[in-house]
Image (cartoon, rainbow, N blue to C red; front, side, top):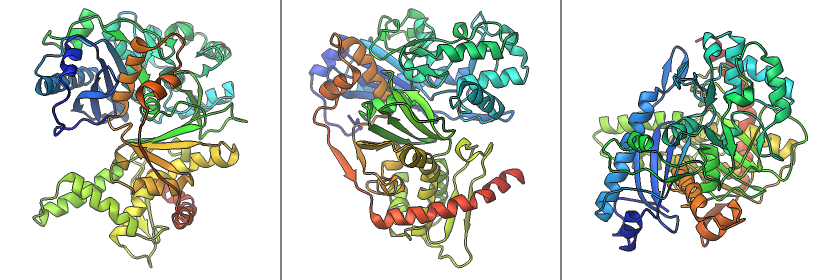
Length: 539
């Protein structure tokens, strides 16, 4: 599924497929990059485009401007169109199907005229603690800080002025889909991060809707059901690309309207599709700016756990999600520091070489980190009950500060909060896993993060090129499912027979020494959490 600039010239038939619109386009707005993937009739990626962007911390709120959204989408599509032109000698005039995915959760609130009422509040914000606590108690269902309903109710608790003009709210994927198609809908997976889903009906939980309306009576102008987007499962058509939508993506006027849109989805759901992890007792771990695990459950958990979010697959099956706000960003900062040092020495190593060298050194470090400790908390972390973060590195006086132990400690730190949530599933709930797939930038260096993750969760971990193009490819596959689906065909069957047949995986089993080392590290990590809390409170 991977596309590179050095790929050999593709089969001539792909140009005809592009010209005839027998393609699917997937676009995903991630935390640091917007990516587009075009797939051919066999659902393999045939062209890609991307645009880098970054969130801003404005008035103590993590946000992106809507102007940046469209600038990024247009830049991303232009890069994709250029890739098509370079590879196939033709223009990307139309696509058969289109899907939009984005980072989940957050709060985009609009008035009746479609005007944004308050800057976009992203998943990264953790200032919704009071709302999260009250709603979780009311519903008997864990409502994480980043969920859209927590943002809405926190606005209620704060008596925010904009609520009197609120006409609808949505996610980032839902917003972009609305502007491209004119329809205010969400895929069930993305919707499950807005408000709890009743897996029996496939829609928002009716009891909890009523409870919220009673709680917020007089403070929100409409019933909650009228504020939220409609919910659709994978495989159902969710509108078509309008003329206005086509111009938003491609101001040049080359792209024509008419593509069939699939329901917009969140990055967690597209990650599940991209790793073929939507069947029960399967799971995947995605590691980027955040790190999270998605485990498809056999049935409901025995009770509510604040560490576990209950969401759904794009098909509507129940998923236990362990979401950690902080992933690989701090590792990237350290790699940047080492790169700067290498440049100062006159070295010419590129970023990939630096990352590979640093990651491989971790395998030479002490199994338990050798008395070193790190926290990768750039932002707050609800699992450990921290409303803000402070990246820290500390060590015991007698420890040996070696590159290997330092890098192993940084990698362990990126996995530690995830381990705390996985302990709830694996130990408290005895959840069984048949397979776990890992993807994301953390796993690009072969055999390092994969090996340490297997030790962290004491479970075999597989990697492969299935998700090489990530969630953008996953949403392209979901778009293709709408137009290629056979009558009555499930998403799981479509993936197994049409997309992943013959896929190759590399699996790493847990090493007993690494398992023991990570367990020892975790004991010190939990004991050191008060140091991290003190850093937040006193800096």
